[in-house]
Length: 202
Image (tube, rainbow, N blue to C red; front, side, top):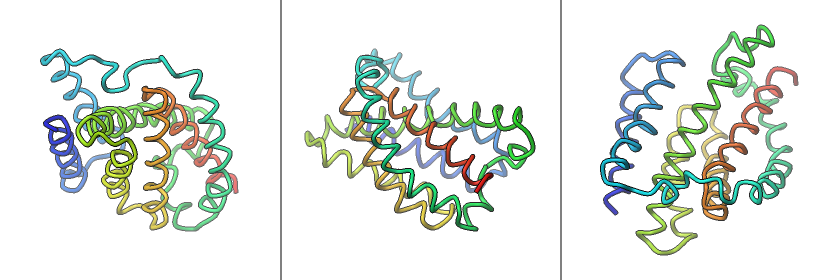
């Protein structure tokens, strides 16, 4: 339970930084990388926590890709609908120059890959895996961890908050099924790239 509390403290720190510091996209990625990945890895090394205990493993990666592909196909109609909404078109892509050319788009999406790894490692690896050990119920842990994951999307287009809850449940199930955050990172990032393309093109 201490690791769960530690995770929530880091999440509060990240939210306070996002709310009160005037951070550009690249600065925000730096802060997120520090709080969501760097600090946890430091304390994991300090207390000799096994990496596989927080999903840093490729054991179930290839097996999980089938589930990831099925989830992506299921989500596509919802993504198309969202990409056509004015609120999403105004908000995404997060970096306006990504609309201006192929190389800018590629650079932006590579930065988003870093963000997605941070997010998946923090919410699925650090928070969910430790919640599962604490509450000793897989589905309770999945639902509980999806609540703060959805709440951090407040301030984005309104539909994204409930969508993020269900996405969090799906990502969480996938992470626990494969005992890895690798597959959920690939799914999350691929979905993000496709959605950004939809927002620009549709």
